[in-house]
Image 1: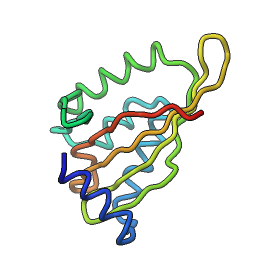
Image 2 (image 1 turned 90 degrees about the vertical axis):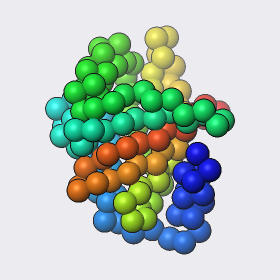
Image 3 (image 1 turned 180 degrees about the vertical axis):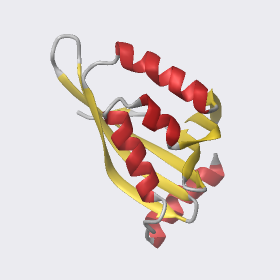
Image 4 (image 1 turned 120 degrees about the horizontal axis):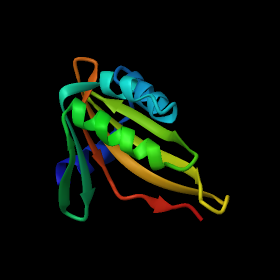
Length: 138
């Protein structure tokens, strides 16, 4: 976790490359379109999604097929939402993202939350992603 946090700090201080950023942008577009097939095509067969929270790293999804299955279930019960990259920075094979998800609650109220993530890109596909805890936007 310290390595990932150090990477994020390095990216913010040293500047950003754009090479692998387009891969992550495609994934955001597929997520917002609820396009499970495109989400799967954007990741490697051995893709892993991790949640990171205060020194704890939990594996959420392992493999392309598991991601597709998980996302189908998510979209079935998902409220109306949109995710935007507020900042995106590439450095080598890594892309750091600050994102904002805006969604509608059951009673029609609009809410937002911000989160940070780091993507590892391998051969033009997402191989790993580390998601950090979201914070509600007031």
